[in-house]
Amino acid sequence: MSKKAFSWELFQKAPIVGIVRGLSLEEVKHILPMYREAGLTTIEITMNTPGAEKIIQYAVENEQEGLNIGAGTVCTKGDLKKALEAGAQFIVTPILDKKVVKACVKKEIPIFPGAFTPSEIFKAWKLGASMVKVFPATQMGPSYIKELKAPLNQLKLLPTGGVSLENMLEFFNAGADGVGMGGQLLDKKLIQEKEWELLKAHFSQFTQKLPR
Image (cartoon, rainbow, N blue to C red):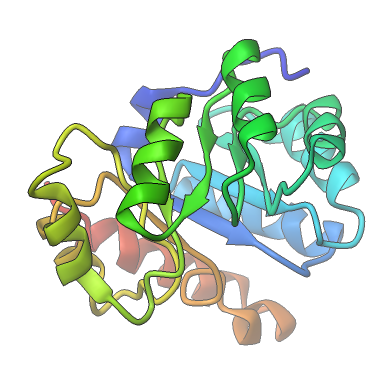
């Protein structure tokens, strides 16, 4: 288990969850300091990334100051056990699994389960989700978040999939409590070409565009 708990204060400073998928430990070692220096605060490593547990463990042991480090693509209680043993401070799932949500609630670990329909989203919230990851948000866009929030304004929503620098503000204006971003934020071309300073500048564009 992680020694430090998830910080909501840190999350609120930059309510973006960066999604690390398919990157190596060496690449993540370069990314984390720049991610923090650019003002970003919350990052998840997906459990289907090769060596995910080692990456989470490294991040928690070496780069935890100023960052929330979590695990994504947690689909089973087996995945959850591995993620928590590696030190993940929060959990993100692509689907709604009652057992995973309840286990996190019991352990007081923030859980952002994936759901799509209003019924699924409300069920996730009732189970004790800290925020509900509205996934995939690609097709429906910001208007879907606005429509969900009208009758269900008590829910905290984290649209993921299809969120970009161009439309991020629209999602926040529609009532999103945060956004999840993978390739749009963690630009694979810049990472593959080891353009670390350009990557840091790219990260900064997102923090500068956040609602104040």
